[in-house]
Length: 406
Image (cartoon, rainbow, N blue to C red; front, side, top):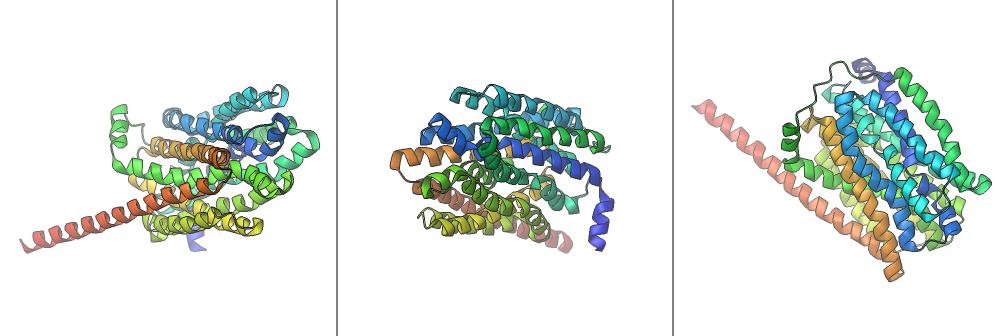
């Protein structure tokens, strides 16, 4: 209770809540094509490869836009950029409601939906800067739990599409977006002690650091796995096991619930035990579950395995964003956008890999096993990092002992 009370006194909770809501509704809209994808696929008669591209384009666009959104948030303030992002997100929703009739329309509005995905680079730094170092994992976990917006999309999207048609889902999505826009504009605040934006030369220095690229690779697996599978699983369950469109959406809702709400716990555990060490165990667990999924067991066994896999992904996302403010306290907006962009790239490639491998081999197995290989590489890198860190600590200790003797 004492720790909870000090947490609420340490920062600005209205901004933390507003950041969560902004990210939540944006994430809901970002993955809307995946939520109603089974209806679009049936209506437009798409091939497996076209299905993968349809749900992957918003993820790619979100990845590309996160870096500029992070830069703008550093310079103009997170509140101003967040409000602009929500206004621009209304454009593809209006397009999907009134004009989307062909696959080319879906691809184009899907790219614009990436604006919602780029909210990641604005919402998390806006909340993070209000809180001291010891609460960064918890704060980034709470704000990042806005990826639970996926639950809203997958739970209600298929039902609304079945009742009113998939075009109407875009129109209905405008309502929660407008409500959150009002709340965000009223209660969110930029931290008054925010550090001045770094110069471009300093940004280049950050890009030269190996940690930036390693964290980006790790996040391309954890968040890329989360958002990529979120976008594609409805299509997977519908195609592989023949469940109804609404049931497929419910299955995705269940596993996404696990991945979303474990994220703050992942941040909390990283605060206590170390993010790098936690990542190694989470990725190792994901390797096992995804390998078994690749054997394509019965539908309910697969569902249970995805539930556990999303627990690993969600906790890993929280752990990674406990690490970033620790390494890059002055450039958190840029690095968050950069690392987040790679998470989006991972989420773009995964649906394409699954769809393409299905079209080439008539099986999803090889797509899942390719994910296992990537996680094996990540675990190997983490083990190397841990050895280097222990070696560095040992060398520092010896240097101190030598200076004392002198």
